[in-house]
Image (cartoon, rainbow, N blue to C red):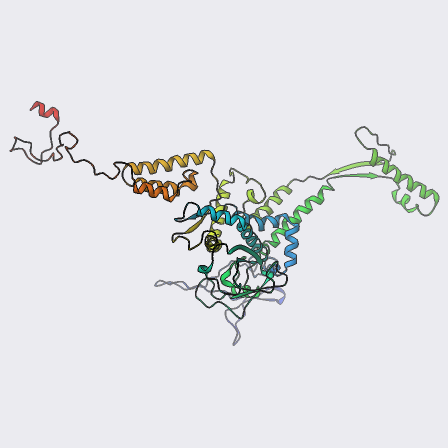
Length: 529
């Protein structure tokens, strides 16, 4: 029975009378507005199922309704994150694996470079350990929630804006990774220029605990900022506008996985238990301290147990009293592997790292894991392009100016190398297909030889061939094309053959009365005629 509403009371509340005179006030039922056609009867609809009599559904005073989500900001607990990173191999995998995969294949540099310039850039990158520092920056951003990669240009003040045109040969000395706990952002000075850095700190001051540059201020134009997991504005403000650690979101799943693992390990100690029944055991123990005879009986019992434990082997004999009994109990571990596997799958799903990459575990069923790896590599490539590409382009721009001098080519760009490696057979098949397609296009006259050589050079990363071809060689082919490539085709009759009659609808010579719409006759019909 529903009570009638009182004056001033919210009529959208549902008050239900239940036994024992208790009232349960349910929350207001949300209304959904739907377009009504002519003659339709309006009705109230809810966005969830509720059965108050059976106490089914959220908000019906049941156990499920008490579930909620708490606030566990372990991103702010630097020491806890470091302890977890050092002691848990799972945390190490979750933090390190994507960082390693984002850097291990490197990049392919595109542009009209001179033959030795790419080699100079690669040697320079290896000399300053560019990719090692980039990987460190990604790792600490995933662990702590943020990190800076600072470009080190010799002879320039870090607090001044960086002008790339002022970087001369030999000035770029590499980069250094500073995690969020080593720098203090300037919240009173933020970037006001429109662009990707709008609203971010203009300066970062290195703390006394920084690995280098202690006490120095760094202008934002000299850093590549790597944030952790993206947060809403107010939560990001609470984290000094850094991101969230990758560990925080999976913390509860990690506890469940480690607890299950340790629980299974503890069960090993109880997998095989032996019990021994002794008549009057309590009396023997109770009399141990009351009389010499009791002490001797207790000592004899302990000696007997020690002898049984020590000499109960395949060749030993166990002696016991006629009234004593010995029994064994064994524990079965059936089902534990499935439980551990499910918790591992939850960790894999939460991190986006497939089982075969995270645990070295092949997926069950008919899957070989290749599809999972391909999807994972696609995610890594998306993260590379969204979070790293602009910063890597910036560092290689500095590297070119320092190693080669001057501005890089206008068409300079970078592409991240593919993580997926084809087998030798697959690579040979792809190479044959690509080469044959380009050759057919050139033979048909759709492209010239120089264009075909360019296409082969661009495909060298995928097919593993023609990688040594240079722009200068292609330019030489363009200036000296193969003989006859650009010659016009001969006109009909120039080859010594009579021109073919390409107008079969015209009347035959010597037959003025022939209907021009009549189909041409075959050779046999002409002979009969």
